[in-house]
Image 1 (cartoon, rainbow, N blue to C red):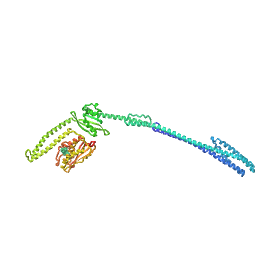
Image 2: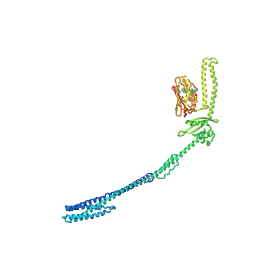
Image 3: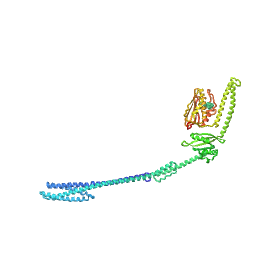
Image 4: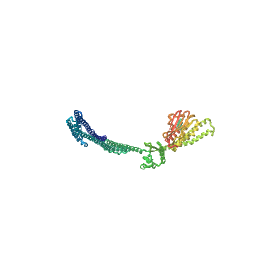
Length: 614
Ligand code: ADP
């Protein structure tokens, strides 16, 4: 029974019940003795007093019977006397059998004996009186006064003393009963107090004994919660707490095994990742939030001429002495843009595309930064050759083109000689085509510049409102001439964007110029800006000819033109949107178009928003 917690609690409970019982029994016994005392008081003495009173009554009656005998009727007197005598003896016997042995009543027996003797004398005297001659009343009265009356008085005296004795005994017993009651009360109070103290101590001891292991258990559970898995609870009892401790220890063991196995898995995964990272040919670095290198592969060791053991846990700049790149990394972390940012850098005679990827932890804070240096030297060399080629061709084209255009213009102006109408129209066509070719050459030169990275970006936080205003201003005249409504709805309170203002001006100019090209009198061109997530979305919307759905993406390719209809002949080089795409993507944004034939086009692009407003 004592092996279970339930059993232990039951024992304590039983013990307390026994204590209550003890108190109850002691109180009961006390009450019993008290009632006994009161019984003695009520029954014994009351009985005696009653008997004595009745004897008193009878003796008075007998005395009267004697007087009746003397003065009135002899027979009636004798009869009355005998009747009362038997009643007297009756009560006398009651009293004689009710003699108590209490010290205060020690004379009761003597009194009873004395009453008996006096009464015998009394009855004997009456018998003598009966033998006296009936005519001599005086002699009889004399005998009565001399012998019977004193005896009668003596009996009455004895009876009164006996009554008094019993009354005193009653008072004495009452005092005793009061004393007993007081004693009982004190005894019960004492026992109750002792029982309460004892019960409280028992409860305290047992509660402590039961709660101690529980407190220990709670403490251990708390430590486990904090990751302390080296816990063994040593509760050696066989009860439920002991079993709980065993289960708890088993659970910790399992938890430890699980943690070890998870740790093993994590280590395996880490080793795998490390092997993958190490085997990557492109140099790779991982920095923590303090910009210390926490991982680098051998390609990175080779590129930055540093050994892993000297680079790990050291600041980025101690191994990669490139402050400009560090500033770019810093700018990305500070601006909290969770985007891949590609920087192009040149180390020695090699070109690298550096992808900077901030890695967020579960609290959405940047905890690490991944840098991958993609070697693009070969591609760069090819591109360089292509750019050189285009550049040379463009420049080579530019001079003869200028001469051709000048020659054509001189002939057209008839500075060399007169020409006929047919020759004139041919020359006008030559001049128009020449202008297109010049524009193409100019845009080619621009695009090669941007693509080759010769165009350096000057990123900063700038007002989109300002950029749009500056771009739109010179275009109002052209729009007015065409009868097109150019509407700028960009709000002055818009947040700043992280951008190169010159390049974005170029992008906007290109989009609005295109819109002007493909709209007619009465059409609208609306420029608006809105915020979506961490980006600013800028839109150039027109109500012009629109673009067929199938060309929506293609228009961003180089040299792409939508097949022109009769109304709108091709007016450009097909390079403008390609340059727009290059620039927007270099900003970490994207560009796209929504359009419907005869409804209009909406060109949209996004730019990252800066935290501060400028
Ligand atoms: P281009 O110099 O020919 O305008 P772009 O690259 O700027 O070259 O544009 C590519 C093609 O996209 C254009 O030739 C035209 O067909 C189409 N396009 C561009 N903007 C619009 C527009 N706002 N409305 C209709 N078509 C357009």
